[in-house]
Length: 226
Image (tube, rainbow, N blue to C red; front, side, top):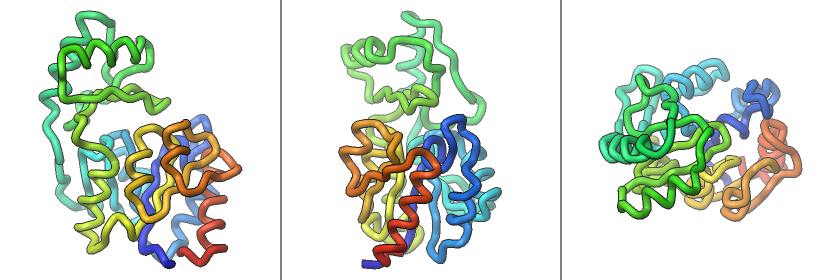
């Protein structure tokens, strides 16, 4: 079977552990003959800058599915409102000293520093029935809609590209990649991935971080999947 596109996470997936871009995987992605979509919990300008530096087409899923872009000059598609996340943030602020990350750029979710008890905060939110979820991507803690994720983002962008999620190979490393990995035609988790991402995957690499994605691409080529 030939897959028609790849969707992959950035931090922890095409980087080293210190978040420096792995140039070997960047070069491989640039030479692929199929579209590559970057899917991240980070903000859109970060993802688009990464896509531009690698030499990709500008397809981006950012804010964990909250923002979709189909090109560098395309109008952003905003899939949700930040209002419920703000209410949850205000509630949690009564219990913790929270630090927002990139608040001036985020439109659909809130990212926080990893300096408070997330499990306790999650339990507090559950008691109040906020329509949000709180997740730790190892780089930030996110308060996000429980209706939006990288999988919902993949469904939107694949339709705009004239494809379906089953046409994609998905590669990731974190809990926020798990839904996307399950939705794709083939899901791969790099070796440093967390338990939920590995559980969702069809294949787990032996190598970690960007080297794992290099291994994944070589695996896909060896199987004539791309």
